[in-house]
Image (cartoon, rainbow over all chains, first blue to last red; front, side, top):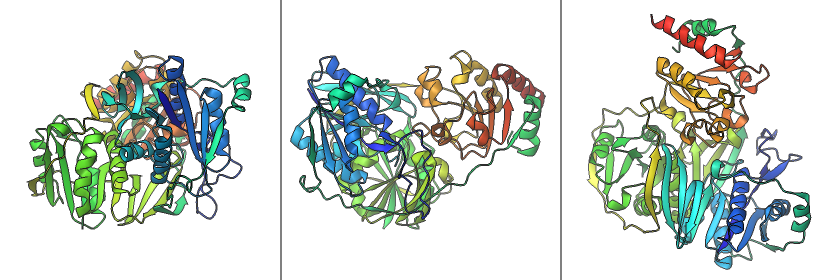
Length: 249
Length: 314
């Protein structure tokens, strides 16, 4: 089968995000950018499915500014066969991203689409569900295990109450959770090889997708910061403070 | 126009996160209707009907809704949505699964995980693991919203007297089917609504050592949580995870044991009223948000804490 995997370029998870001085957005100038960690898990899973003989081709798609190519190259170095960049300087919100991915799916006709359950920048957790809806496809969100069997895929989902197992009719959209796998480290020879793999460029206009934002960010602020409290010497002192000072027990 | 809240329920019990979503809906200044979709969900519909401030309960009974499959529930909500200005659901794994599908079918943006209502079209939501709060305005005719349960008080579960109306159901799409659930059984309070939470991290070392936390939790009537590291290591199941991508909790008292305090974990607990940290590394970032900290070996501190709690009771 053919797999499409969607990857987003985000502020690296080790960077503490800060609002810009004018409150218009988050500071991203001179900040380390990486592949969204959940998408990395999606890429790893797709490569494992290819290594297991379940998949025969993996295509990665990313969208946004020209530098998203770097994110695609990382995916290619991990084992993806080719990349598609939908290049635009426009702000892309999940609904628009879902429309762009739908357009790519209609061109590429994959049987399985993998992507992270959420991006660690906007924490929206929407995109996979949205394009599954556009296509009338099944969806397995928060996946911690997946097993392809014939015309269906069985997915273990990490839900609030524990784990839920669903059977999805293919084609399907899977959004990946933390414990699906542990992504591999990319080796240098693979980085070199990835530079030669095909990477096509498209634009939202070429795909006929209107990406106008529906949400306006009026401002961004830092939340109220907690102040460090005090150190107590032992459990007895702690219980005393919790009982008499904080009055929470 | 009113707001529609999608109720969440399991085993004939209303998920309390629904009550927080009802409060958020009331903040919009419109009337609030609640959709209860399920199979044999009459008891839940009756429970919602007496929630304070609910105008009307829409009950949708079908085999197709026996499990909250996004593919089958979303079309039902989409069918009802045109009569409403807002459609809200708790930002639980169920709400997060279903609502973007609803938003897409309505061709509107979703506003995820709101923590405040500024006006009927403007909302506050955390981004970047809660390190930044965004104020966003929606220009869509219907606002599809998920609500962070800890950010809104629960609506009172009595005092209301709404009518229960049966609504037309939609057909099963057959796209997905429920196979089975492995849900964690526990007599302890539910993590996201517990007044006290005791959480363990990598420092706990193994599954067995979590018994030390269980002992403390039982004495405090607390729920047990964990950091991602403890879940990844297999000490406890995934539903214990507190953090950016796990559960968000804001109890009266949060006790973090053997948790270093990565920003992703802080995102899930930093709105707790009082935070206690027990960690042997005095440089651990958890101490920067803790009201009370003990620098020490948790295997010495926990038994002492247990004994002190006994003294308190006697």
